[in-house]
Amino acid sequence: MSTFKAPKGTYDLIPPQSATYLAVREAIAAPLKNSGYGYIETPGFENVELFARGVGESTDIVTKEMYAFETKGGDQLALRPEGTASVLRAALEANLHKAGNLPVKLWYSGSYYRYERPQKGRYRHFSQVGAEAIGTEDPALDAELIILADQAYRALGLRSFRILLNSLGDKECRPVYRAALQDFLRGLDLDEDTRRRVDINPLRVLDDKREAVQKQLDGAPKLRDYLCEACKAYHEQVRELLTAAGVAFEDDEKLVRGLDYYTRTTFEFVHDGLGSQSAVGGGGRYDGLSEMIGGPALPSVGWALGVDRTVLALEAEGITLDIPAATAVYAVPLGEEARRVLFGVVTELRRSGVATDFAYGGKGLKNAMKSANRSGARLAIVAGERDLAEGVVQLKDLESGEQTAVALGAVAEEIRRALG
Image (tube, rainbow, N blue to C red; front, side, top):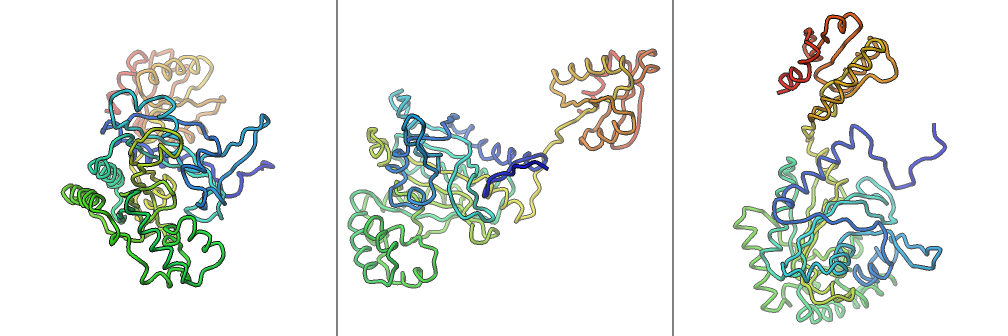
């Protein structure tokens, strides 16, 4: 046993489970690649101020959960707690918005970090796939992203998820609602921290999961009653586009999400089989974020889907993904000459795209064949001195047990034929 273990609240991805995580990432990315989104990768840490400004200084993420540190050079940095602010920073720094083709459509995949109380579905290190459409205000973009996430989940076989949808208004109508909500909340019996939140960002109180708070929110002003005509029309277009695409959703007037930068459309994907950590992903429109971090006005929309929670959702529905075996062919040499010859065959097969492994370490036939079976390979190539003297190898079907002598020069072609 090693002296060291993975830090609390983190996990290691190891085979064979890691193959499921890779398959989930690829399934989420597939519809994005097919819809004009290009891949972007940003550093695992950024300037602290990027998140303080973008995510919001009053959010739990910034005040309680962010891993912040000072470098030897005195820079104040933080491990990224979410992806949107980093992606927008990178797009602005590279002037992608000036290339003349808006929106800039980007997708990403990576690890994120938040100091939280670890529990199933909530980790201090977690994985997300996200997408951002930067620089265009269009309800069709909001609908597109929701549809693509729905498509990804359905491609994985998930069915027991729901899409919650709301509008948070804009800089014209939200301040009026904010003031009305503050007046209501100040009359409630709230703890000191929550009262401070009422002053800084009262919408976040609506998202408070504590029963003592939720009980008091009956009768709170409804944002929908304060939406300006432009926001009402925008939200209705999003709803109509989703309905026309056959994507079911539920209106949720309490949905505000945990980040300060959202405006207008906000949405969440929830799965009822995950208990308290039911959100598997979400996002929304963030029309003012670019200006918050020093850029020009760039209305944008995006989402992030949790890979970890998506895997838990698959488990909750009893879904096992059809993942091809990592190895299709396993070579078993018996003796030094066979080792040299079969290693050449293995190299040839790999170069032609056949997933092939080799019995390393000079294993005897019995142990080597056990390894071949454990690898998941369909075929084994076995060769000893007598086989090579006759110019053949033995090709064994590991499912049926049938074994055939194949000319050494034709083995690669015969394997490709057998594997279809």
